[in-house]
Image 1 (cartoon, protein in one colour):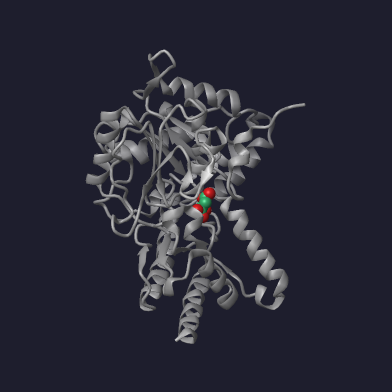
Image 2 (tube, protein in one colour):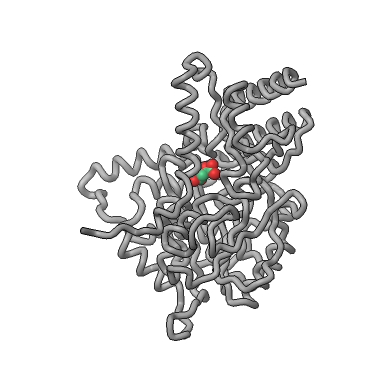
Amino acid sequence: MPRINDHYLKLSAGYLFPEIARRVQAFADHHPEAGRRIIRCGIGDVTEPLPMAARDAMHEAVDELGRRDTFRGYPPPFGYDFLREPIAQIDFADQGLDIQPDEIFISDGSKCDCGAILDIFAPNQQNRIGITDPVYPVYVDTNVMVGNTGPATDSGYEGIVYMPCTAENNFVPKLPDQPLDLIYLCYPNNPTGSMISRAQLKEWVDYALEHDAIILYDVAYQAFIQDPELPRSIYEIDGARKCAIEFHSFSKNGGFTGVRCGYTVCPKELTAKDAKGNDVELHPLWQRRWSTKFNGVSYITQRGAAALYSNAGREQVQSLIDFYLGNAAILRDGCKALGLDTYGGVNAPYVWVRCPDGVDSWGMFDRLLHEAQIVTTPGVGFGRCGEGYFRISAFNSRENVEEVVRRMKAMSAQAV
Ligand code: MLT
């Protein structure tokens, strides 16, 4: 009889968002009337229609596949040049950054890449892993799955070095006092909506270079950075080509959460050690992993993604970002007006709020759901340091966002 991967049994709870969905469904089943008023600001799933440029390009791509002379089968495993080239040009060369098209790997989304990257690193606790707390749960859970941790304890999984992100350090962790091999950073940050400064990011790059570490830098929310002083890519920092892999997504800028497309940058300078202590380049390993386990993103999807780089596509993406940032401002101002300690929501679509009256994260989740039919994400679901906070997502209609603020106001008036 086959044996399972026992590491899965260590996973302490269901994945956060399905767990929230389960609790919301249970509430709606028991309170059908109230259930119809539910406004979902939990998972950061986009609500606005796809940009017209992407839609047109995808329609055209479908028609091409419907004609013998323009039909295409398997896509190239790492992505079509018609997408890799504008990415290299617009996201990097135009910003003065040196990233070549063949260092860009088109994928079905950055969540998948954040998990898949562990395929090319030694499993079973052979690497020292640093993860911020609170954090996007995928980084932790995927490390558990490949055996990079011991069992879950009250202070998290044994074997992970948690790097606290608190209001006191503006949600940017201090440099570790021990050497790490793989470090996860995400800015604009999910879940706290905070940003890292260029000087702080440089400290991390310098740390990684000094300790031969690799930073796994997630910029899924890059499009929300409006302040030109803030770093949009880790490759803005000298030396990052030698120590960083960067994950990008079209989910939150192009509204592709359902379409599925993103990309990973793996520079050719990156190396890590084999079991004998030799330096091995990561780019060929990632390429090998990719061509073996993936058959590429569909032509239709890649045409849609490439259209986001057209002039029209870029304008349409910017209006989506402006719209969601407008929502974030309403939520942030609304929470502040209620006297709540409120963070994020400026260069990010997430607003991070301290629960009032010493209520804990799940307690606040329940209160908002039961009393106001608002779904949020409990901060503790992102890690121990998230306890006592809740996250509100700005991905929603304007009407719903305004209604969320009205309901929170009514709730707080009742509590007085
Ligand atoms: C979130 O709500 O944190 C994100 O939507 C999750 C994701 O992008 O996978």
